[in-house]
Length: 192
Image 1 (tube, rainbow, N blue to C red):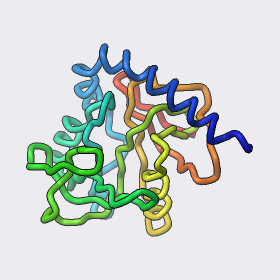
Image 2 (cartoon, rainbow, N blue to C red):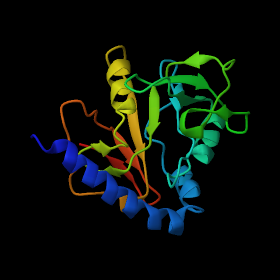
Image 3 (cartoon, rainbow, N blue to C red):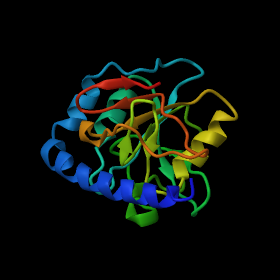
């Protein structure tokens, strides 16, 4: 589809606009509601590292959920952007620990925090559908990261968003990686 980049650009604009009122209405209660869901992945010896994201602009705040998971024994982490066109890498970080400004001034763990490789990723997005596709910001960071990690081991991707960010179908191309689940303030969705 020759016009897919333009379709995605317009979808991003519409999704960002739709997220704003949802954030304004639910930003205080949504992080609490995320913690009330049954977490869809079991903590095991070979699945024990989870990354989240520090909220940017009107993204839902995953830090309380990350704190709950850390209390249950998960090793928690945040992503690091190295440069455009490259996958993310991750440093261990527990909620409440110090951060430093990262790319786009998004807080990230300091350089002396250990590098880890997550088994589960809480993934930000602008829009999602129930098939498990997500519309990100267009940099491809999470798609590259998930593709690389999934080539090595089983990795679970959980989109985290406001329910209002759901769309009937996300425009996709061959590079888009599927989510296994989506968590919103209203429900836990098993994708597929």
